[in-house]
Image (tube, rainbow, N blue to C red):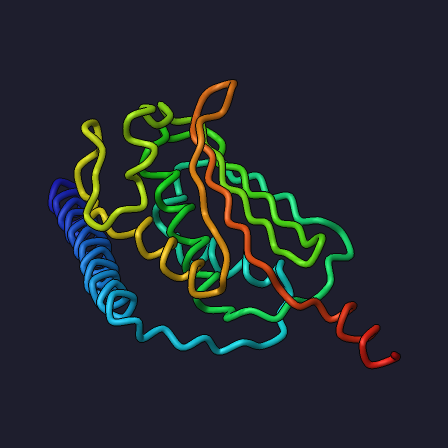
Length: 207
């Protein structure tokens, strides 16, 4: 029995090591990807590939991108019913939202809820990510989207590029992103992107 127990322990240890290596590789890939994306933004080399998409697919893809970061959090998603299709660069907005989700998870305690709101109205997409973390010090709010900026109490493991990339991708769409503190605790990030909707397009064709 002791031999079997030892074998089982070795298998468990090997499994844990492989899992840790896979997580480390994914983190390294994210760092490399962030550096490359930041280079594109600074070189003004972002070329939008606009196409029609459903906003719920953008949210679903962003959650998948955030991946492991969300594994210990509860996720509450609110997507407006009957939202029209919108013309955006699906991948860039998806990555922007994914970065906000990863950032929220990075700053909030395991077991807390991260909320996502998505709606389309008045010719714009609004994406909101809020958390139950410590919030953002007032003197840091103007700097959170700066390249390599990390707050004084930032947890280890970040690169300071995630939010700068969000800002670059959203501005490429002619939109804006802002950060604020929630009145009941935590931080909130809002992406606002002007868009063409399929409903509006149909009306124009009828005219």
